[in-house]
Amino acid sequence: DIKTSYAELRVKEINGDAFLVNQCGHVEAGAITGSVKANTSYAGMDITGAGSNFVCDNQCGSVSLHATSATLTNLEARTSYAALEVRLPAAMKPAVQARTSYADVESDFPVLMKPRGQDAFADVPPGTPRINLLNQNGKIRVVRE
Image 1 (cartoon, rainbow, N blue to C red):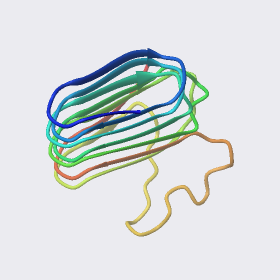
Image 2: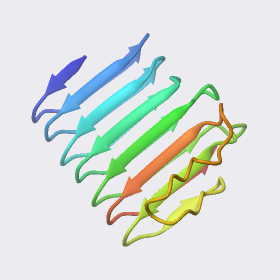
Image 3: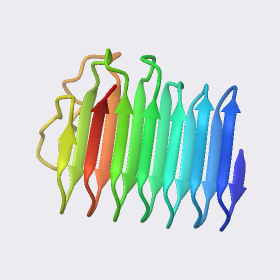
């Protein structure tokens, strides 16, 4: 667990889970083997890891996530005013929900289209990786690698 307020928070090669909190600074994490939970508010976030669970929340800055393992089960990312990009392994067959109000959604994977208020994952078979992306005013991009 690492927490700071205004400086850059940078971690690398963590063998296990990472809980990263930065009030207003950039968050960068690479080569994380476990789950990642990361929060910041006004700067970018760049996360790369092989864990099964990512939860990343950025109030106003960009979010860039790179899941390197097909063992991913859950990925949630939110921001409001900047780009949100997720890179996933090519062999993965995830269920993707991506919502933004004032920009485009571009995805190399199919995106679930359900009306607001309905559970987009209700008909998704158990064991399917779930990708839930929310952006208020910025673009969402999901890339197959």
